[in-house]
Image 1 (cartoon, rainbow, N blue to C red):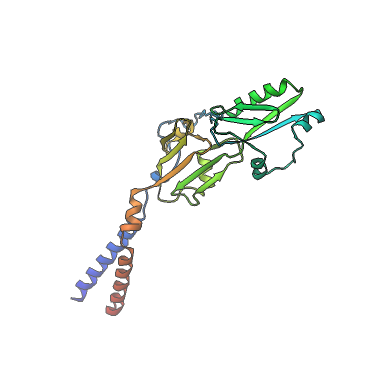
Image 2 (spheres, rainbow, N blue to C red):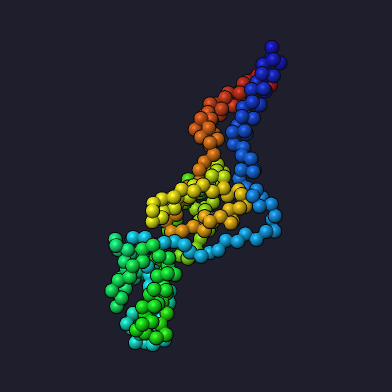
Length: 259
């Protein structure tokens, strides 16, 4: 009888251990990124230009600076700015795209910029400045370049980008990386356009992402890392409290029977 009980307890204990291990196991193929799926040649060059395609929208803030070797020209545009300026400084000294799509800058009454890229705006401003001043250079920067990274990442949130460009991996890095149960095969990208919001699904385990049109993010992009469906079972359905209680009970029985 004692031998039979001992065998039964050992089998039960083994089942509990196996179930616990299986509930937390994830295949390495699910967590590795940039696998050779679409593109098999690992020596291939992944061409992806960094040209900004973001179209300005109402509410955007532009920092505009005019530099000139002529002190009088600099004074007109008040361009004796500090050497080191923060994002807060840029924001407070920026020009807002109004409800009609215009920005009002210095002696230029207004300039329609909605739907234009930063480079197109710079070109228009440079042309206007050249009509009145010589040897003056115009610099334009989008101040409120922000992206949101949500879902199964270590530190989800909204991030302000101080560069002109950021790719999807850099953005996820800002959020602390994808957690264990983050589905790298289904990253949802929500992109706002002049026509509305677009939704795209990206696979980070496929090395073809390096050639994707969505590899580089645009202002106001939202990344959502979905959890694997197994997570809901592991953390919600899987009865950890019952398992722990059962293990404790089995250990007590083992001790009592001295098995």
